[in-house]
Length: 618
Image 1 (cartoon, rainbow, N blue to C red):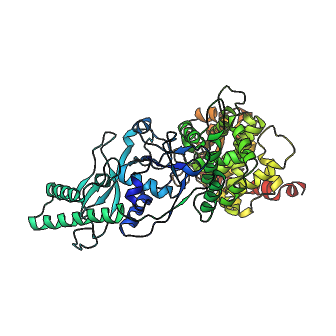
Image 2 (cartoon, one colour):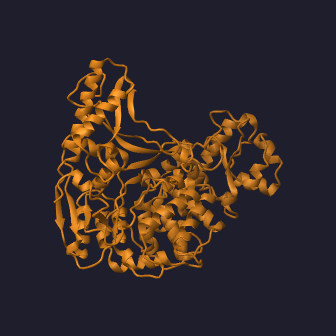
C-alpha cells in the first residue's frame, strides 16, 4: 500500500494514471508552492482515493499525469509545445495501468511537477506578444537552502521557502544558486536534484555531501565560520525535504467498483465542496463517455479538442483572449442543448442521451467538409460579428453572451451581415447600460435569455436582441442612463469603443446606423484633439459614430468647418444620428456644445428605453 509522497511519485505514469472522468490539472504555480510548504510543515493535505481496475470487467481509457505543464491560459508558442510542455493529459498506452486516481489528482500532479517536472510560464507582461517564445520561461520548483525555522540569523529568511525559478531553456540562463534578495541571503536549489529521473530518493548521505559542496562553491562573501553555518542550514533543509516532504504520509483509500459506480463516486466527491467548477465537472463527464464511442473518425477526446480550439480562437481573435477558455466551449455546448450549468449539482442532471446528442452536435459538419464545421463555424461567426462592430473581451467581459450569440448562429444558420452586426451592437449596448442595475453582464442574465429563446416558437432572421429585452421586460433606470453619459470616456487612441459606457451610449444611438451597417462606422471626435480642451476631448458629448471613410478623410478643422464640406444628406445623418444640440460647434463653443449634447442624449435614451411607448403616446 502506498504510504508516502515518494512511493506515489515512483508510480505516477508507470502503474498509476488518471481516468477519463478526471478534470484537467488546474493548480497554479502558487498553489503548488503552497502544497510543498504544507508538506514540509507536516500539515495534512488530504486523502487520495484510487480505483483498482484490475478487479473490474471492462476496458478503460486512462490518461497520464502532466510532468511539464503550461501554467495559465492564453496563447502558447509552438516552441513551448515542441519542448514537451502540455496543457492537457495525454492518453496512456493501453495495458500499462492497473490503478486510476479518482480523487487527489491536483495534489499528485503538483508533486510530479514540483519534484520531477517544470512549468512553462509567460513572463512578458502587458504589451508583449504571448506568441513570442522570448517572453516565456521554463521554471522548476526550488527550495531556499538558507531558509530554516531553526536558524534565526537576521541575514537569512528564517523559514522554509519554495519558489518556482527560471531554468536554462528558451535561450535563457537558469536562476539557481546564491542570491542576495534585499539583504536576505538565499540559495535556490531545484527539488528535482533530490530525486532521480524515476522519482526515487537518492542516498541521503550523498545529498548532504552534494549540498555541502555547492554551498562551498557559492560566491558568498563570508568567513569560514559563517560559511560552515550556511552549510549546516542547507543540510537541515535537505534533511527536512527528505523526511517531511518525500516521506510525508499520504493516506489513501482504494475502491474497485464498476465504471457506473465510479462516476457516481467521483460526482459526489466533487460536489461536496466548491471545487471544481461546473464546467470542469461536465467536461470530466464528457471525457468519461466520448472516448468509448466507436466512430469512423476515431475516439473523440473533448479536452484535447477544446484545447486546440482555444489556441485557434485566441490567435484569430486576440481581443477576446481572456474569454476564449474551456468554460466558453462547455457553456456554448450546454446552450446548444437548451441548458445552462446552475451549479456543480446540475451536472448530475445530464443523462447519457444528452451526452450522445451533444456529441452529434459537435460532429455536425454543416455546409463544410470539415469535422466540427458547424460547431466551430458558428462560434467563429459570433467572434467575427463582435470584432466587426468594434467590441472586445475587455469591453463586454461576458463569455456567456458570446455563447448565446454562437447558439443563434448554429441554430438559425445565420450569416454575418449588416442586420446581425447592428442587432448585436445594440444588444451589448443595452446590456452594458444595465450593468449597475442588473449586474455586469452576469451569467444570470444570459441564462434568462437562454430560457426565453428556448421557449420561443419562431425563427429569427437576425439576432433577436430587441425581442429578448421586450420579452424579459428589461430596462434601465433614468439614473443609469445619466451615470453612463456622465462617466463615459473614450480611449486615447480614438479607435474603437474602448470604454463600456461609450458602447452603452453610442451603440444605442442607432439612428446613425439603422439604415446602414455599423460595421463600417467608427468612434470619432466631434472636436478633434487640436481644437478641443485636453481635459474634455474624450468626454461622451464629444464622441460620435461616423462612417469610416468619412472619418478617414477628415482633417483637424473645427467641426463647423468640417461639416460644411459634407454633402447635405451626409451632414444631416451625422448631426441627427448623433443627436447634435442646437449649439453650433464652433471652436469657442466646446463646453456649451458638449454639455448640451450630453443632456439631449440622456433625454433621448430615457424617453426611448425607460418611458418607451408611454412617452411616444403622450
